[in-house]
Image (tube, rainbow, N blue to C red; front, side):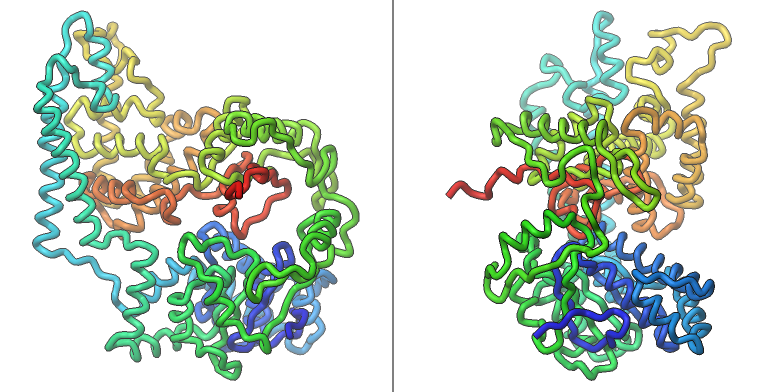
Amino acid sequence: MAWTLDLANHELTNGHTIEASAGTGKTYSVAALVTRAIAIDDNLRIDKVLITTFTRFAAAELRDRVRRRLVDTADNLQKNQPDPTDPILMALLANEPERSRYIRNLRRAAVNFDNATIGTIHSICSKILALAGLVTHDNSAEELTQRAIVEVVNDRLVSEAVERGRVWDDVRVRKALEARLGSPLAEQWYDDTLDPTVLAELADLGIAINDMVNEVHHRTELHPSFDDLIRRAENALSGEMGDDIRTRLAERYTHAFIDEAQDTDQLQWKLFHHIFPRRDPASAHKLTAVGDPKQAIYAFRGADIHAYLDVRDPSNMSTLDTNFRSDPPVIHALNALFEGKSLGEDVEYARVSADPGKTGSKVRGIAAAEAIDIADMNNQFHASLAVVGHVVRLLEKGEILDNDGWRPIEPKDVCVLAGSNTLVRAVHRELQRLGIPAVASGAESVFADSTASELRRIFEALDRVNNLGRVRSAASTTFFGMTLGDPRLLPDDVAPRGPGEPDAVLDIQEKLVEWRQILQRRGVAALASEISGDKQVMESFVAGPDGERHLADFSHIVDLLHAETRGSGVTPSQLLEVFDAYALLSGSSEVVSRRVESDIDAVQVMTVHKAKGLEFPCVIVAELWKPKTYE
């Protein structure tokens, strides 16, 4: 029988499960329990704590919550500043003789917080493999040969095909020049100048090139898949060196917290049980699972609710029974709908109470839980208009209550949850059309966005800085603020410059030469710093309503490229290879799916799956009218 969790007095035991509904403070409780454990145990360093959750977005938020909780608790202990709403702080303050020891332990953890292991199971597996010395890249002769073939095919055959397609007469010179400066390959070729047989052969060549790149990508294991990483980690722990690896991991990690535990599958549980023995509460290694079986929504990605139900121990469970997030009317309605109902085998709805200190709604000017009527529920256009209309009313009339009192609702307060990526894109487009700042997160790979395509054109120019076609293509990106038809980019014989007029192409070419040298000598991070530090370049890059989103995508891509190139100098061709390997990954991959940027003052638009573990002041749930099936 589960009991209500008492944060101030809860002693961590191995195999304990905290099972609670959304909004009851599961993430808050994880941060609080970590803080208490660090404070009272002189031997528990932050690098001995392992915390994992299901999505990268939730992991980032959890990491920030734990860090802030450590710092704030230490500060409040130092100032002797009580907070009746914080049971951990009040309990630590009450033990005055130990207060200085608590402060010392918490500050040590805060200083060394970069050593904390907090992330997705994907990132945890990477750390396990690294700790076991099993993360390698096989630079075999075959691999190097394959890479050389790819580079030759791309740089020689394709470039020659492009050159052959650049055919124009005097009448079509402008159109051909624009095509030369960056338009898609198909637009540069003309049906009357290229034999259909050659086109068919080139199509076959393209398929062969793509297959070859995929094969090299797989063989080098440059980016192992989610399942590959877990399987490799499990094989390492179960193999000949398993005992040694388990010993090293057991020495490294003594405490673990698994957030969103209902979305963990059998293989992942097996990984954790190598270090934290199953159902052994007396073990010195303590694993705490935190979850809610009602929220198991990731079966399509391998999550196994039955694995969670099998692992939990009914005699070692606690629960949280107060919802601090939702307005009381919403909570009362949910209790009336679901109390006493079975939601599947061993999954039941437990009644929750509203926050006793919460009277009324934190939002005014528009009704909470207001339904939006959709005339045609299957029409994406009508749906997006209705949702966006609701956003507009929120921003025009709505107010929200925060610590400083009532204030107007801002774009960053609003999140639109959609049931499909199609609606995410439709809502995002309509918000942009109305001039409302908006960010579509997770709808697609960051490498499918315009920022990525423009960065690739920059890297292509760095790879061939003497090729004026590539320089002009780079110059026509938002980094330099020019367009394909800009006269400054045209050759002198087409658009002669006036006396004393600078050569824009030459100036940009010189800048690209500098960037190439920085990349080769100091790496991706140094190049990104140089680009970011160029005021003129960055002002051009972030101009427009999506400037902050482009900047976030730029940082995301740079982070990935920097990590993959190990922070060292790299040639442009090597960088392009890494870039293209990432571009092959599906947008559903956590690694490349566009990040949620909570600090951007923009409406967040995302799918329900991307929002897992996050919270926003105002949430509009779209497509709630649309059933999974019509049976």
